Amino acid sequence: MARQLIPGDVTLRSIKPGDGRKRINDGNGLYLLLFVKGGAHGWRFDYSLQGTRKTLSLGTYPATGLAEARRKAEEARALVAKGVDPSEARKASKAEAERQRETQKRAEAGLPAADSFEAVAREWLARVHAAKVSEGHADRTRIRLEQEVFPWLGPRRIAELKAPDLLACLRRVEARGALETAHRVKQACGQVFRYGIATGRCERDVAADLRDALAPVHVTHHAAITDPVRVGELLRAIEAYKGHGTTRAALQLAPLVFLRPGELRQAEWSEFDLDAGVWTIPGSRMKRTKQAKVSGGAHLVPLCRQAVAILRDLQPLTGAGRYVFPNLRTRDRPMSDAAVLAALRRMGFPRDEMTGHGFRAMARTMLAERLGVDESVVEAQLAHAVRDSLGRAYNRTEFVDQRRQMMQTWADYLDRLRKGAEVVALPARTA
Image (cartoon, rainbow, N blue to C red; front, side):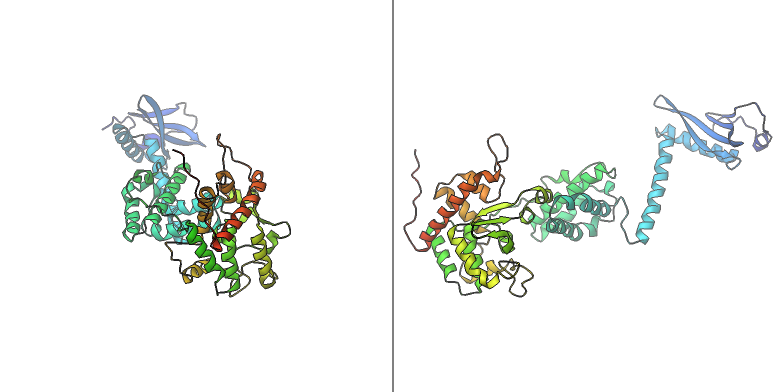
């Protein structure tokens, strides 16, 4: 028990204005500082921790009496004996009380606690993720978190989560065979944790501890036909396709323009200059980051004679509307993303042999291997990043002339394959 020097509250009540003393000691660091707040007296406790002298306020007298001040001082001494700073402990206690009040208010409003995983994740989705990626990409990430993580980890404080907690969620995804989804969920959670670190709500990214914890994803590329004989069979099947005219035109155009299926089916007539043989696709419609969609330039697609002919034949059918390939049910929307795939299946080309995206892989592979076209020119037409030996990105407009020549050479080559002409042989390899 600390030595006590103040006889009792009677002594304290006898103190009158004009008293010359600055403070009255009670021993072992506790004292009453006189006339500090408009005539009130303030309890103070001095202590040393790790060689540093500090002072803790314990309230004012008479609101805090002598017995209460001694109790508070004793609690502070016990903390100091354990190496805990009473001032920091008080701040933490106040912060926790405030957190609980805020949590209660948010719960009454139907919102997760501000320091919960769900709250941090939704804040990251709105402030960071949505500003970087396309709307569709952001929606897919949100849905994955809502379905795979929030039901189990959403209400918990993000600072309290450990690697096994996150792993348990990911194991549920793995158990149903969705390995790629599990990896994508882990990647999104890692970004949420890093945002939590930046905003002071957690101290580390526990997703980083799961680097080798998930089963690996075996990457499979989009199925594509690259054998010249089989390509000829595909082109003849497209030419004989008996389905809807717009679907047939999309199938005919796909191998000639190297575009992603979504970029092709959302084509708008306003983007074409058929007289000049150019298709100018706005950056906002290309597969890019959100910033690149806004600041990046348009993608130019030189049109070969065959592509122009296909579009001129289609123009009387759909040219009065917005979309080159309108939806079969309503012209206010583009063709369904399943239309080309369904047509390929009806023509006898299974999923593991050919896909809508496979026309790009077909062109990339055969242009390089069969026609010897420079890879940089092909990559520029595919709208991939093309860099020189120093890592600098080429300006794609530098390849317009080369691409125009390449597109026509490619179209003529496909015509020969469609007609069953002699296949261009691979160049002999030197030893």
